[in-house]
Image (cartoon, rainbow, N blue to C red):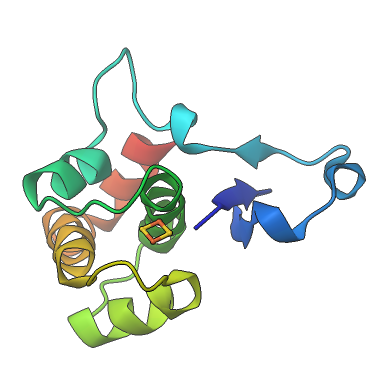
Length: 120
Ligand code: FES
């Protein structure tokens, strides 16, 4: 849904008041692309057609960014559990799970150090 990163942690912005963010580093989906090019995680979402509405897709990308920045390889079931807090009723989530899982396989499983470099 409305997930953003606050000081590196994925949080729902709709549940926060602006004064709570004073002095915090707030990161939104606009921070992900570099030089107008999708980063690897965004490209994986694109490849898998891992789309929701215009509110939810950015939120999923920011939640997925927090997941992959931890540098842990997760199973599909673990990814499903990780995203369980941001589901709506509009569609299914298999493509999102596939996008995150593929990105983790390409980066974390191959070279854990590469995730932090690309996403920061
Ligand atoms: Fe965004 Fe359901 S509310 S896809």
